Length: 417
Image (cartoon, rainbow, N blue to C red; front, side, top):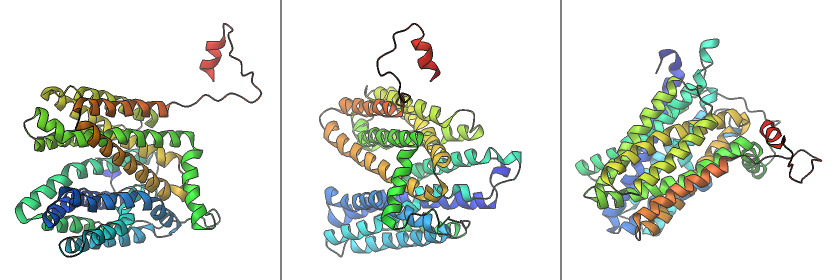
């Protein structure tokens, strides 16, 4: 990471984003462990983090709309972070004292604040001041790669931190640690730059504004295809993560050893994004997205062999593809999204990906119980579907003859369109 790329504003941003995202990744396992300790049932314990995730997916576009309407989005982000940290401590207190249904309801009410820990940060990147002149030309793409790396760090550190703190001091302490990490991000969010939203362009009425965010995704063919790829690919990624403990039990000697596969994937993702950050503009984001999705499919097919050395290779390949895939998606969003809708598009996209991930988790639970290889092959099939979504449909000029052109020069003309 070069010094000129990371001024005080960018350094503060990356520190805050990393703290919030590590807190987010810590909170899920910590709440699951706390719920298990309080209820004694794994099924009941999973309801609280599931309610948080589901309501975050639904409420993300609404939070993004408010973020886009704000001249001080950092203040709104800071308030949401503080609210989420408070909600975590409230859920911890509620688990052993309140009926489970009320605790799940509290989690659902807190979920719409969750985008403040992830996508809402990324939407603020273009507002950060950068170095003037030619040396700043590469900075946006490079900082986008650094931003994606904070997800990799969080995915690696969060679950490990939750397990370590829970082992030392109990599940409640792990939830408190997650809340503290989220709280540490508040000062960084508070100091994010002001924006100048053009009120003349903001649609009258929140409902119309939310519709404008969804239309913005569909209006840009590139952004729409990239969003579709990310959502469909997340179905397969969710299946792979869910299959990891089963693969650990089948090939590595224990279900807990499946965590090693996920840790290896997180490390590979971090390394791949670090390399990409050195030359962020060397390859077009669309090309990175396409290649990364193909490599993910190949990795899941390799994992379907359920052989220990091949499983390890598959995990490394999956991580090496997943990190650049996220970086490419962010780059496309920053390039294609109108500034006044950036928060909505980032939070809406994150919500759609969460829904895809949840679907993959559910599918893997059904398939892996019957056949682990079949579940992993299905995960690879979703990557193939994602690649199909990335292929643009050819447009026929108005008034053109719809009949096929069988002349000798037809292939050449098709290639020039």
